[in-house]
Image 1 (tube, one colour):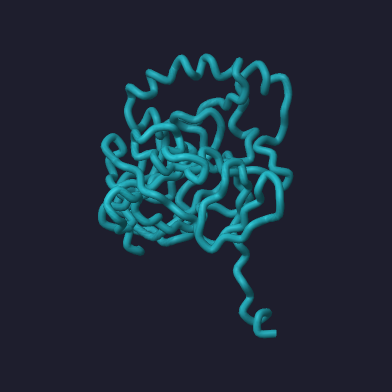
Image 2: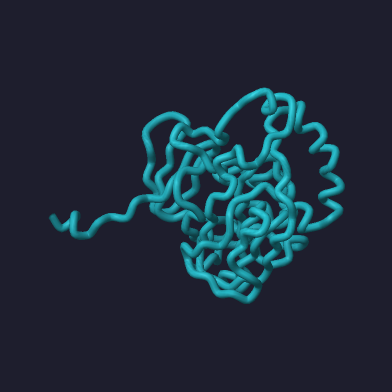
Length: 242
């Protein structure tokens, strides 16, 4: 792990991570847009990012109908739901919670009103009410990774398990404080989300498809808000030699 030391008052160096997925996902609440990315420093969220699975046309869901506007929708309708979540770095699992239900999804103001009413109740439940099913992985001293809103019953690892980069950990769900299936990722200085402070992150080796313009290749960086990103295909050394 690279040193994160920085001058007094400056943010520490970003923690480098691999993308936690295959396929295409959209960035939302990206720290490339603003910090704190989710509008708050609470629960170690200062540099958190939300990732939403999409299809080849950039759509988050398989269909749009009357339920989209007037009612809740089953989480299975969304491309994120059930997609594999991979380890973005090597470490040891220090917290694993997987028994929270995946609730219905909501996409419009009409359907979001009842959800907003229940916000206080979820907060009172603490970490399980807000994060839902989640994993916390110790990457190094004072460096912890949280993967949040996972699918109920999908966790493949338990507390104390070592993990390697790219290992299958769970599936994306819609548990906790989530309006539609997505993966919330953050790095922090403590395993206790109640007191943790967020740490900057950067993703390695990915292609970013901005809302306009040509695709961008990043060896280390962050996607802009609403950009679609996917892993950079590895270079075939034999093809390169030719």
